[in-house]
Length: 142
Image (cartoon, rainbow, N blue to C red; front, side, top):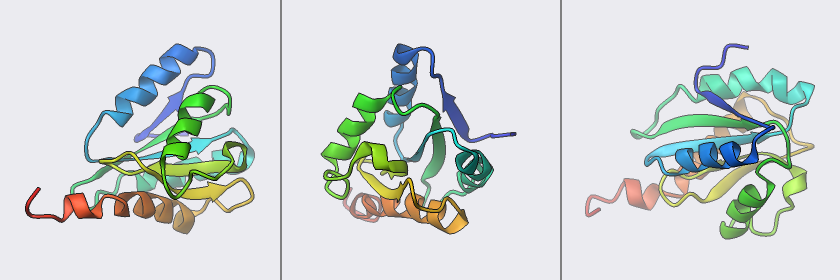
């Protein structure tokens, strides 16, 4: 698998995993997709997610973080979901993908474990998160 816009989060070093995640959160104008788990379905979808991350809309870059183990960033990701209005009532264990908006870092574009990881659903995940910050990116007074 040749992934160019994907970072695979380490499963054996929780501190490094958290530092890597935080370094991506701190980047402005970056729509971040988080894919959680390591199933055949996810492995098959990773090249599609990576390919979609090459697309730039409204000067917002995209990146994919692959968190292969649900436990590695559990607390951090649960907190992100809880802080976001569209995901605050969702169960982390039922989610295999979501994206974070580029400015407010709001979670959106959730794909449930029983959902399909295909071109359309992955693209929608990116777009839903990006749309959470549309007021900030299209406002000429900011």
